[in-house]
Amino acid sequence: MILRPGGQRVLRLVRHSESNWNSLGWVRGQADGARLTRKGRQQAQRAVSSLQTEDIAAVYSVDLRRAQDTAAFIADRLEREVETDQRPRERCFGELEGSWSGSLPPADNGIRDGKVVDAQAHPVSGQSLEGLNCRCADLVESLVMQQDERDVAVVTHGGSIRMIRAFAAGTGVDDMSWGSVANASIRRVVLPLTSLVTSAR
Image 1 (cartoon, rainbow, N blue to C red):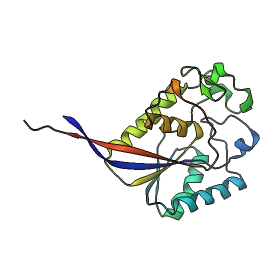
Image 2: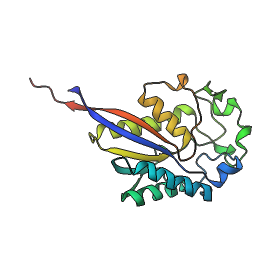
Image 3: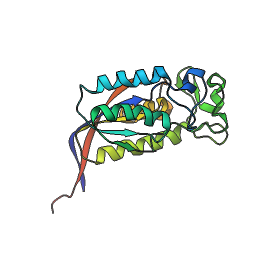
Image 4: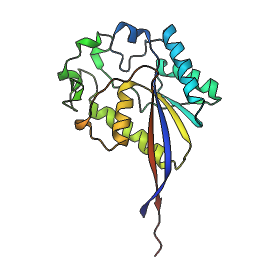
């Protein structure tokens, strides 16, 4: 079998809206106690306005509450169902979840001055950046293999958005920058589709 170039698929990566944990500066990770603030609900409505001008065929969301609530605003206005997927969940920060985010040292999170310095670093009971990358890469590859050229919105987290964008661009984790991803911001990623073809004999 051979790989044949196909069309393209556009992802609209939406970071969940502001939660009360965001406003307090707490480490969220996979903890599910955060809820959208009033500002967060307003942000979600503005994100919907931006996406309404696009041809969004499906809305995917991480299963954590802050992402699900953001996705609900979007799916309702776009008249789509929310499809839940755990793969682009935020990285687990283990024992550090619920602590002040400014206390995360590079030895635990693998990031220093906006750059990845150790893709294998992880907090106690937490996940490494390499582990997060593997989950996000699996999602991207599955969307590519669907051979569906329709646009999709994926409501997820800042770390996952950085990983998906880097993987789609062919950037390894060790070469990643770690820039800011604002709540309810939307990033556009174009995926080239490929298909498996059985060669004639």
